[in-house]
Image (cartoon, rainbow over all chains, first blue to last red; front, side, top):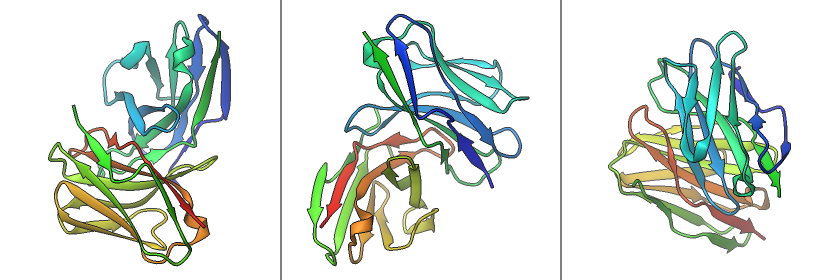
Length: 115
Length: 111
């Protein structure tokens, strides 16, 4: 079965330190890959996506993500965390070649940035 | 900017009531989706629609139905609400194969 794994329920990081939120996937072929962020009591906001090309993708709010085909991973990163980055982060994949735009979501990782 | 709106932010209903959740998008997107979000389970797809009057079941359609009579509007219907349908409901829309844009969510409590 196709799936997305976010192995950490929560990531804690001090403000100013680099952060990584992990995502691995089990999907045939080379899927499209996405990261979304959810602030408290809000809907999801699109952060970035990987379609093809450079393995390092830059997105909103200074976030970037690195696609690693051999490890089937798409980890979210930021060089210097802000307290305002504290939120719930979701990784999602869409298999290539599908006729619809259905996404498979991970279970989410709560990022807590301490001042 | 794409805007996806949902009819209510918070809703409290009683067991057995018929519940309508409405979603409207303003970007002429073909695809619309209904998810429910529960702690530890992430987002689970209930139904989606890729055109007017077209719908497909997602991963957890039981107890739900949908309606898409106009391109901009996608309704989720709980025919007879039950307590296990207490959840956050998220609507999303997308152009064909583009990223999905989400509404603010409706937190439904069924008593």
